[in-house]
Image 1 (cartoon, one colour):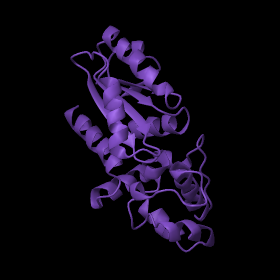
Image 2 (cartoon, helix red, strand yellow; image 1 turned 45 degrees about the vertical axis):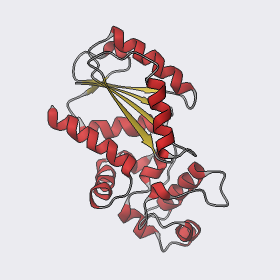
Image 3 (tube, one colour; image 1 turned 90 degrees about the vertical axis):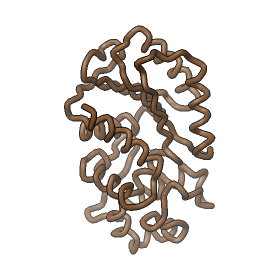
Amino acid sequence: MNLCFLVEGELTEKYVYRSWIKHTFPALSEVFTTGAMIADTYCIIAGNGNPQYKKRIAELIADFQTYPAIDHFFICVDAESKAYAEAVKEIEDEVAKHVLPPQLKTHIIVQNGCIETWFLGHTVMMRQARGVSGMSKYVKFFDVSENDPEDMGAHPDDRNRAHTHQEYLKEMFLSQTPRLRYRKKSPGPILEKPYLDALRERCSTTTHLPSLRKLFTTWDALAAAQ
């Protein structure tokens, strides 16, 4: 099985997907070009933001015609200010412009909000953080320990929805004992399996984070088929 991932960003997404893939598919080896994907490999390609990643979709689909060993193509992007359905359709329309190899299965994973929206789903960590003074602004605005992070909009003090979700996550990390720091180039405990397990538990025990649940459901089906 060979999995190719096109991720929108160059930092956080590559670090996180690499770690989570290793936890979920330990038998797969990472390679760094589509041409090196021969057997039981995965490759992560940075799309370098929107709209640049759309050009990369076309380039990668052309590669897949040359390298038929690639079985699954994951396109992983942020919805940002768009509605989830609108963001999904935008990618579907982009993919539909191209002829796909018959063996290739395409999976569109839209991070509803941004990737930090998913990270806010660590219920235990958030419940520990609720009583810390620095968190009051965001908890009063939207308590992500009780409500779906994907439903949260932009705080009036912040630039946009993604900014709110990132700042909320930073505050949640800083409220822990010992204090943690979240940086896009250093996601910290998010890379570790216990954090991934906590997000999986949130998805399996609530209706929250449906865009993340789609990723987990797809991965679990592929892992079961190995």
